[in-house]
Length: 170
Image 1 (spheres, rainbow, N blue to C red):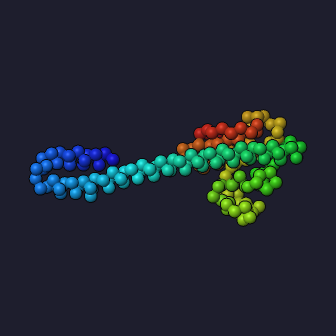
Image 2 (image 1 turned 45 degrees about the horizontal axis):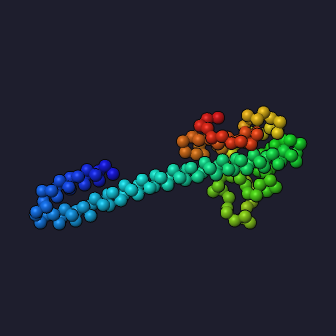
Image 3 (image 1 turned 45 degrees about the vertical axis):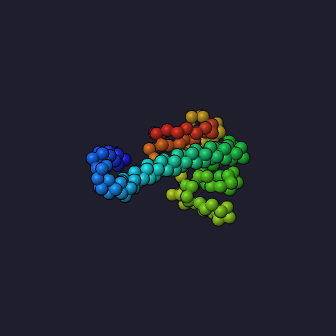
């Protein structure tokens, strides 16, 4: 962007001196051939960075939403199993969640009829604390996204009481 502005200023100075000569047309053509594409490329670069940030923010929002749904499903499970939370997150699907919210969003197909109940450990996007119950301290971490899932080291944490917080460290 700065390079484009410097070139534009230099051309402006040239135009001032060449306005009465036949080179004025050549300078004008140079502006349209060189300067405008440079400015457009800079704008496209900025738009690409903005899109990357939007995608990162969307992943964080999806993660928070999934953790809240996991919290609700764990509480429903606990009501059926003497206040005990499940041994692992895969026990929640399909009885307590309509989709496998514990997976990475890209790990399961969009079509409901293509979903499986056999999940590999590397597809699970969250670390889960086993052995907790509804009576565990409310500040106990029930689940959190695996470190490195989000840009900037952000980690979303689900607590036993069902609320989710975003932090940079556990």
